[in-house]
Image (cartoon, rainbow, N blue to C red; front, side):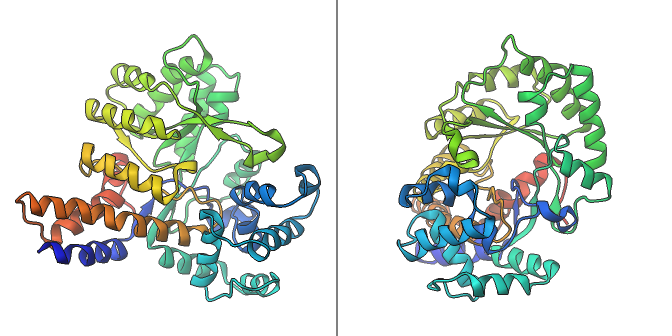
Length: 395
């Protein structure tokens, strides 16, 4: 190909490759009320609630006393009727409504609610996955959540298009259990859920090794169980919980972490595989450097506050320059089903020029690029690396 053909081929491969969404907070239909979808869930997403408090006069406490329907009405009126929905989160809702054939200029949510009430859940999920261009979504499954545990006991679990991951925040960050207790819990959960990986979100103050229970549990329970069952450990580093408690789920923030902990983990556990994402923009380059030094690190995604096109573009360019295609560019982190549509649309739109530029530079520097090379690279970035790292091929 010549350089003038690159843009079109890259867009084609991005559009036709079914991605694996390696980290979401979605649930398969068998998890019932835990599976969020529809206009009221879209509008009461914590990103939009945080934005609401910047525009509306209502204070958090009276807002939380409203019903979900009343909260959704207020968010719509404030952010979509009285103000232009130009932020990433509000524009995402507009993109979802447009993709589903709905008019985002409406002043009332009545038509939207009727539309979602009329949907057959299974067919709606298939449609959303198709519009998002994904084949599979990895759930976040917490064995210590009483409601979720009861559903697992009653037969809920992964279904077509959904895979499980084992989230251990409560075990690792909040619990007072001993290493043998945690190990038994993890072994039981792995056998029941068949997760593609374990995962934990960690504060910006995370240090390994340290004289604390987290280090003890990682050494004596978590990482040995990961190694025993051959599953990676996903570390999501840099959360500052409850910076503004009044905002509840919208009140968390980010902080720069000391990534020398990754060096210590990789040296002590060279046979464990780590999926790593960091929440601070300032940590991104250091993560790439560590990934070049330790082959058991696989960087993934532009997480949470980093999931904005300008930052995604910067991080992905940096990773391509330093790691080639040996990383996973993005995950959606979606909590509401329809968010998949706009989050993956944004990813494709943002990354197309990033990949195109990389191939143009390669051609200009003397190496020809064929269509199949681009197809292989896109498949590797958005499917193959994850399947290889987890050892589990998606259906």
